[in-house]
Image (cartoon, rainbow over all chains, first blue to last red; front, side):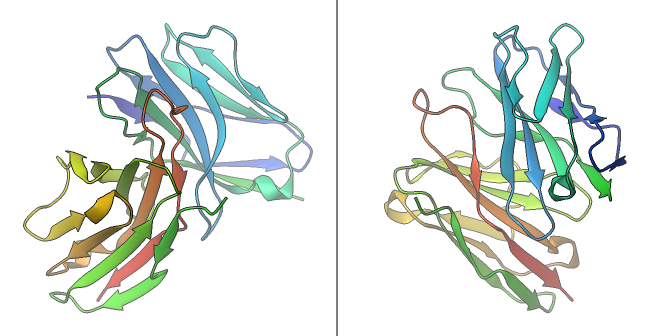
Amino acid sequence: AQTVTQSQPEMSVQEAETVTLSCTYDTSESDYYLFWYKQPPSRQMILVIRQEAYKQQNATENRFSVNFQKAAKSFSLKISDSQLGDAAMYFCAYRSAFRGGSEKLVFGKGTKLTVNP
Amino acid sequence: EAGVAQSPRYKIIEKRQSVAFWCNPISGHATLYWYQQILGQGPKLLIQFQNNGVVDDSQLPKDRFSAERLKGVDSTLKIQPAKLEDSAVYLCASSLRAPSNTGELFFGEGSRLTVL
């Protein structure tokens, strides 16, 4: 079974600074998707960024980028120019790309990000 | 485009009582998921539907939890009887069916259950 580990329960960053959230995963599959989801307090979970394992190029979405190291099974999220609205729980998640397999997301335990003004 | 709708947002019950949560997915999304998120943890899949059929319910405590998705659209998750450890946020999510999907799940705001 696949597992996702987020080793940083809490992180803090100063506004306008850069922060990196860590994620490692364990799988025997070669094709899969990795995601970072953001969950603000009492709000719905929304997708931040998505990476397909077969793509070597790291995904970027505006101020958000990932460092995907397939061999090391590492998938970190970098937030540049942090804003107060970035404060939330961040979840790393894994999904198999195997056709006919489960399409469920397997989540890590999350990292609570605080942004200090 | 309307998002995933869930109700109620909050529910407080006594242990051994029953509760039901409702979810309406995004229109056209064939796959529907119920996740349980206990405070301080990541969401855990309870059950996954493909249209009105169950794809994965391996982590659903079937002695007390049940779910249905009649007509392949909205879904209901029921807990009977509730235990203290069922206190959690119940998240509903939906997605397009592969190969049309991008792997992304779209989540509702969740239903927060407190069992006293």
